[in-house]
Image 1: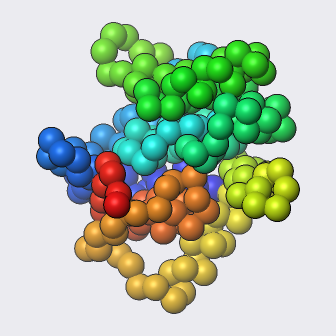
Image 2 (image 1 turned 45 degrees about the vertical axis):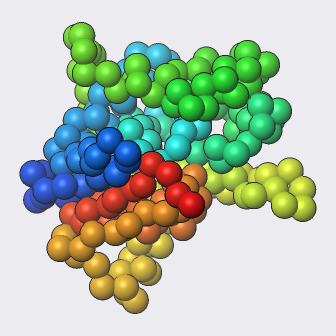
Image 3 (image 1 turned 90 degrees about the vertical axis):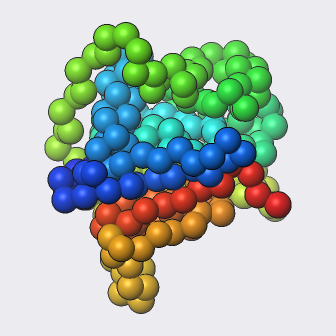
Length: 228
């Protein structure tokens, strides 16, 4: 499963940069160990909030190290990550919350208004990304990684909905690792590489190229706060 793969990368490359985010105020950089600590914090607090292994947890936020940490934390918990397009309207988010059966919706400040309204419409509790990852104050102990078999669902990705309502595609841990292995067969990437991420992380290609593949082998991903 992917949490085991990421844990192995943290062991080997803990002090190497995992994610950098470049914005107007400079660059924020996170090592593999720091990202792992953030993911463990997210997993622990989501468990306290009522998300159990096998349940769905939606994410509505722009690209960031925090997005990656929550995604990794959901998988570490044995739950299922459900990333949403940040361009969705409140009505679209509400529709997909009902369709996915998500127990929680994690959102950034930028998407908070849409998330809050959709959460009220569906009765889905909304969790602020910053609060979920805040280092201040005592936090619950990180839950142990449960036994996750390759055939267990890891992610539900929604189609764009160009011709009809978006449909959720269920990907197992075996699907994720199989796609990673297929990419490695044709693209040589190792811990010396830096990958520039320009696609939104809710996109299937971005999750492979800017998260699953580099985080498997200790590479460094760079995100830009804005694109033009």
